Image 1 (cartoon, one colour):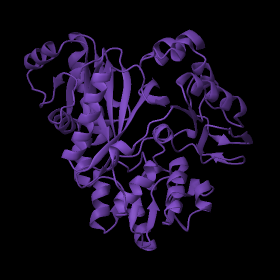
Image 2 (tube, rainbow, N blue to C red; image 1 turned 135 degrees about the vertical axis):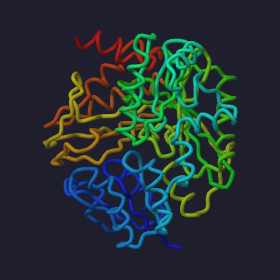
Image 3 (cartoon, one colour; image 1 turned 180 degrees about the vertical axis):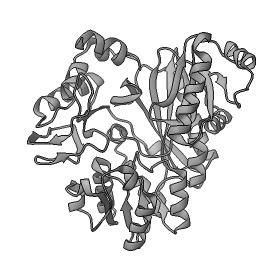
Image 4 (cartoon, rainbow, N blue to C red; image 1 turned 135 degrees about the horizontal axis):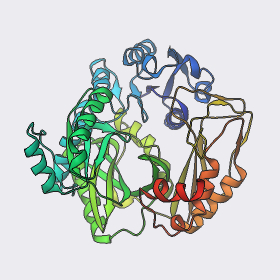
Length: 450
């Protein structure tokens, strides 16, 4: 049976999805804004439809325009990628009601796992350890709030239940800042997500960020594809990711992987997903579940040889696929560097014309990107330009291979964070795998760029 899929995204993930579709003999429809008329993947699509002006709200976040394009081209499914509408339960529901297969979990599952309070409850019921905190409605009485927080213990985090991407959260060190921070976070959550509900949890002070890749068939079968370490981050945004996460307590890891699979089986999860944790003192603490493909998915693909995007397509479109845990073969260590169009010191975006560039290559090197010489990086979207991924037998070798890849990789005409990656990869703390989620922002950057 032949299929046709609309790719409701842009940039490298749109190109990644298009390649997977071609391997599966699936016809493709690309949608684009007027600012993206020169994107690489448009040249390879079977059909393309302009869905609006540059503003994301009028194009890639415009559900009506995307669904109109889907109707016009008579597709079977809609592939959301990451960002934009990928975790929008309302959009998934609109797809379902319009007769298009949303390539991901059902709108009901997205809604459940997107609500952090519901997600924490489901995770806990499956044996996943959660961060100590308070999940109920925040009392109106200040005295009651004080009692709750004192029981949890300072410092605490105030988090929006509908938050994500580092937004809708605030750390409180002591009682003097509690109520002002609570009020501001509620207002921010309402403004950003249309939902002002927040919850409280213990602030884990210096953890690593470890996540588990899962795949479910929507019928009660599920597997995991191991871990990733995403601790090198700034303002909750990941910069370097690797797989597997090393120096993890074996018993805690075994229990956590089994619990993650148990959760997916229990909720009959469909497609690929990532369960994120804070890891400190040999303990895993559940943060959230992302019901989509992750930017860093290539490092998992590199150590397993398992194509996650093809799995998404196969599962959603009812193509043959078997999920068998003991067939997943983990080999080596992979590292991914996100190359962004931004100043490496100030992190200010740097859109503009790429006048010249050279991409890395060689044994054990993968390069995922949509850019090319002569491409103009627009100012309207995420600054991600390229992902450079290396695979080697050991972490040390993967780092060396990445440094070699970055040495031959250059982009001219705009600023990028290329040099930051080189500096981090040569850093002693990173080399010894002793960094945490606070290291880049609080220690590395102040010590190296001031």
